[in-house]
Amino acid sequence: MPVAIILKTLKIGLLQLNSTVGDFVTNRQKLIAGYEKARALGAEFVIAPELFLCGYPPRDLLLRADFVDANLTALAETAKSIGSVPLVVGCVDENSERPGRALRNSAAGIAGSGFTSPGTPGRESFGNN
Image (cartoon, rainbow, N blue to C red; front, side, top):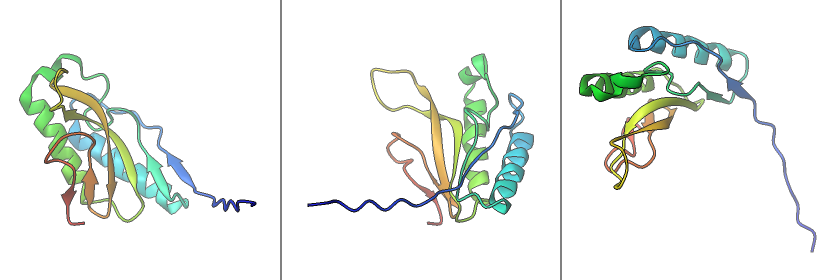
């Protein structure tokens, strides 16, 4: 029996942005501006660079709890500015899996003012979804 395959075109916006390590405010502003531009150009899904919110490479700043907390706060604040077009952005996330390091290079999916982050119990969904 033949199988019908329906293909739909999906316009993906790939943001090529430069972040500054530790400058959460400016990185967040650049991210939101890039997201809005991609959306205005018809993107139906937007992808931002690795570790964009905290800046790359964060190196020894990852040893500071306030840096990691600021990164997660920037993620939650960013979620408030994102509409129905999904955004995936790189961030630092806590890792509850053992054995393993306390933090992980992660990607968060944001849509409709909420976000999901892989793997951390209790942090699966935030926002007003």
